[in-house]
Length: 175
Picture 1 (cartoon, rainbow, N blue to C red):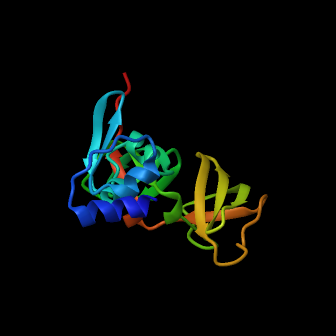
Picture 2: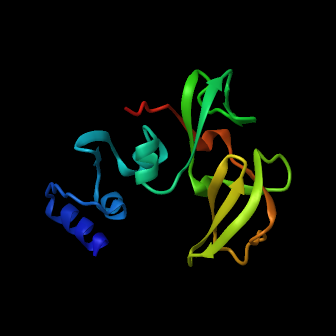
């Protein structure tokens, strides 16, 4: 139905204002999304841009799933406890939220940025969802369904991601 509504909007050439709490519906139908939080505008943009470049913790978690680490950006990397993660924006310094989407993470045998234990592996049809318990908390990683995955519940795994797949934003101040 969402595809039909979008086609109708284009065919008739009308502008439509829609209010919804359904993120998938907003991302499917909108050319531009206005994300509200507690009655205030949180972020405005094209759905793809907002998903790939959230402006903070709320946006990253509201529009899909996100792994968010609190860290300190210094010298082209982000330090999170005893870990040092690659920083795609080396000019950023200070307290930051380091955001990586689950589909941007990969299992690896070599060069892991973090290691953990698979605590859950769930089949969702077109992809697998993994929960991985690490020293920094539980991560979520998704893997396309291209057969039975190598990692099973209870396995020790390495996880990595490309620096370009991380998004860094100044830490939000909570009052």
